[in-house]
Each structure stands twice: as C-alpha cells, then as structure tokens.
Amino acid sequence: MSLALQERLQTASTDYQKLQNDTSNAVEARQRLEAQLSENELVKKEFAQLTESNTVYKLIGPILVKQEQAEAKSNVETRLEFIRGEIKRIEAQLKDLDEKSYEKKLELVETQAALQQQLNPQGPPAAVPA
Image 1 (cartoon, one colour):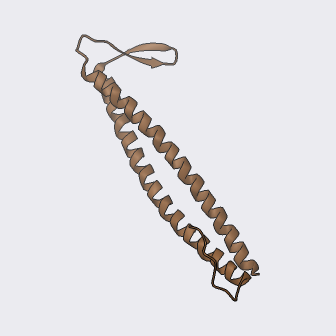
Image 2: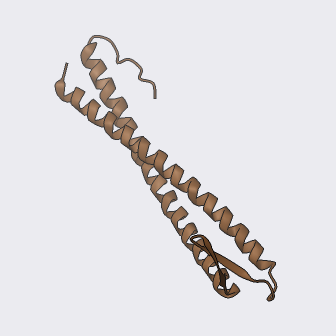
Image 3: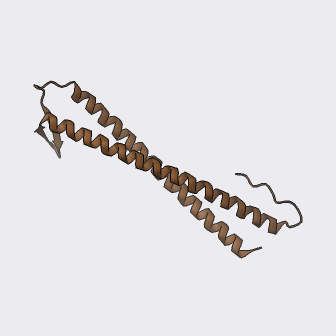
C-alpha cells in the first residue's frame, strides 16, 4: 500500500473538512446579516411613517439620547448599504468555497479509487460513493 497515497488522502480529507467548516461559518454569517438586514428594513419602514413632530431617540448604553430624524434615517440607510455589501461579499465567498469543496471532493474520490486499485489490483476499482 502506498504511503504517499495514504498521506495524500489524509491531507485531502483534512482540507475538505476545513472547507466544510468554513462554508458552515459563512452560512451562519450570512444568516446573521440577513436578520440584521430585515431588522434595519423594518426600522426604515417605521421612519417613513414619522412626521416632523415625532421625536427619535437613540439608545447609547443605558441612556436614550434625542437624535435628529434626518441623521437617524441616514444612519439606517448607511447600515443597510453596508449590510448588503457584506451579504454580497459572503455570497462570493460561499461560491468560492463551494467550488473548492467540489474540487477537493473529486481529489478525495480519485485518491480513494487509486488506493482501492492498489489494494485490489486484479479487479476493477470499487465504486466510491460521492
């Protein structure tokens, strides 16, 4: 049995597991951003219903501080733009991770098939589940 193939299989397996973990973390980050996006869009809708006589307060620590409506609306818009940008960045990261995972999975299957061929040289290689 080839030690080099076994080491290659172990390395590919470790790399694949890391890619799966990175993907899971990116999905969680995207979900958090989606929740923040929804929350900020609700705030924006609420702001749209305000009249000039309404007062807006901002929570700073345990204290509510009066804030200008225009400033509050601008802050929410800026936050929404930032969150949307982060979602796009995470989506691109997820696409890249998916591609790398697919390539690593192919490498794993090929290495497993080569090892199987070495273990059983007279017969056809065993089918490896994808």
